[in-house]
Image (cartoon, rainbow, N blue to C red; front, side, top):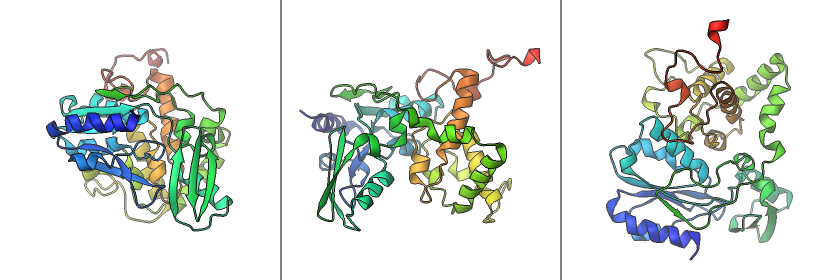
Amino acid sequence: MSRLEELKTRIKEALPGLECVIGWQKGYDALHNTPLFMRSAEDVDKLEWGALNVHNPAVYLPTMAGKKVGVVVKGCDSRSVVELLQENLINRDNIVIFAAGCDGVVDLTKVKAKLAAAGTGAGVVTAVSADGKTVSVTAGGKTVAMPMAEVAADKCLRCQYPNAVLADTFVGTPAPQPTPVPSANADLDALDAMSVPDRMAFWRYHMDRCIRCYACRNACPMCVCRDHCIAQSREPHWLSQDDSVTEKLMFQVVHAMHLAGRCTECGECQRACPMDIPVLALKKHLNRTIHDLFDYQAGVDAAAIPPLLQFKTEEVNIKERSW
């Protein structure tokens, strides 16, 4: 029995005791999978598992507080679930976690670039197949084979947890630990190599392209204060609706600071951005600082308390008394 069929079987067994189970289904074409809310056996039959499951379903869990729900997760998604549990934003008794080993997901921008280079034109994608090493996409009557290493999402190139760190039901054989790719943190390396003025110019250029759609916020599983978000709150009035680089950069910096020590680097903020702004680099930079100061990685241990959500008289790596 395949991983997918076993997942479907286990979900059908658990479904009568759940409000729904969140997973993925085919979208408007063969290249796009979309979130699926399974409430019946017929819904479960629509479930997909594979390289096109790019969305992080954990983003929906805080909105379903008080309901007993299931969620199907990849390894990176499971870290978001763990972080939500750490912060008591969801109740462990109300969450049933289904998982399987993940061979990585594609970056649709990279796939579309490959299709364009292969001369498929604007043809509709009619078929996609993936075996973990190669992704084959048929569009405009032409099939293009792409090495997974060349079209994988950047987060997959540095993946440490291809299997769920927390699961009630795990099906199939665990995925092997991927070999780290040297270019996985090329974004941070490039920023580190810049002077401060050049770095500011880099961010001002990108923020000038921001359309303030807040897709980055809405796709983030750890952005849970949307009803009181500084982007919309007028009491206090932190941000205006002025379409300026300063206001847009202010929002992104505050967004990143609110995720310091909490971001699991699922990459949903950057994937959702319609302007392809590298907003994840801001979160990764802060994550690196948190790791260096507190030796902490978000969403790995459900019993751990995030360092910025607790107080210690003196931190091991911050020798403030000796200053």
